[in-house]
Image (cartoon, rainbow, N blue to C red):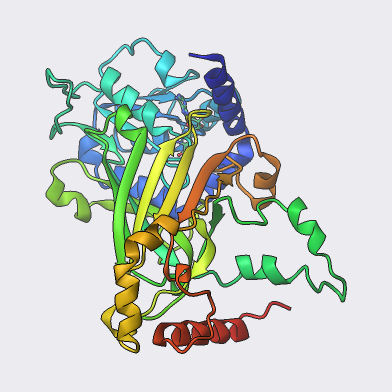
Length: 438
Ligand code: SAH
């Protein structure tokens, strides 16, 4: 391991050797309920089995597995203080004969005394991949799971007998309109108790919203249904698959709206066998449509709002790339390709539109490229907003690259009498009137 990786990992584990982080996770009822139900409703899988809990923390999942009838659970965690607490909790619940706490990185374990039948782990970070703890689960699967099969060409085959909880994870993305964050930053300091305080903006962390924002959002802020952008099958995913992930989606706009950025969340499923049963298995969701979890949602702001009209199609490229400086972080790049204008929005001035389409190549060349670097300043559960502000060293970068839209041809707002511009101007005026921050 190189020294940068060692020191990143050291910081990572230090952040977890702090009870407050674990308290936050234990207080996250949707999270714990999903694991509890998945384990307790599948006692037949756990009875008399050997279970490995990768990153056991306080031992909560190990204790569920033991209660579900596991013969032995190896509770592995790299954090010494939290392992000490786990031992106390396990003893307190009379489960010490069924759970062995091992204070090590799972990668540093050579072998266990018994073959592992089942892996359980809570590895998910913000937007699923932050922290890269999934790599440790894959490592454990490939090194210790009794039934994990590898083909000769090293491509894992999904085996019906592999049990990893959760078994599947899905990352979603949907465009959102911001109702507070950018508006508040833009206006509140200009007239603060009658004083212009705007020079403090550069001192406020992430005041330009170039960093991802971890926050819960209201479902009403989503301006389109979500799209699935990554799916993970824990039985087959390989560490190399996680280095760089791309997806492309198109949002067809049902109602004229404002898009301030893109919101990410994930779901996990706990399925023990074939694909058909996944959707019927226990689900842990971090969607804005259900009770909030400590993962909240991850918001990536565009450098500027965009204004698609009804019928437009917004094509979005999303790239998640593991950071070369710190593998626990990702660069998240969003590029919006040219909005495909809906037929209804183009019919006022046919000549003008003909010209627009015939000069597309030229205007593409002239496109302004706006790039921004975004950062989450904390590992997932180093938690409250204030704490996040303090830990600038643990960063997840993201870039939003709004790569040209209708604003390249006409300013926004634009006072010309083109149908599209009139509509956009009306939306902005209405929105501004509704969103004055005192
Ligand atoms: N399972 C617990 C804790 C989840 S938090 C619960 O559900 O409440 C993730 C835990 O995994 C942290 O305590 C962290 O220290 C541990 N962890 C992360 N990577 C690890 C690794 N490679 N080896 C051992 N422990 C790890």
